[in-house]
Image (tube, rainbow, N blue to C red):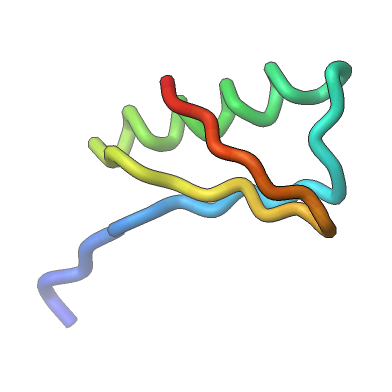
Length: 53
């Protein structure tokens, strides 16, 4: 297992609200920059949306 590679990060949150949206996106973007990723997922209970940053 020498060639381990991270393809995507996943942030889990029950619900994205106006109160937590910035916090959830900022932490995900930080991880994406650290691992040099172009795509990630925020998994919620019952919401579906796309964010392009």
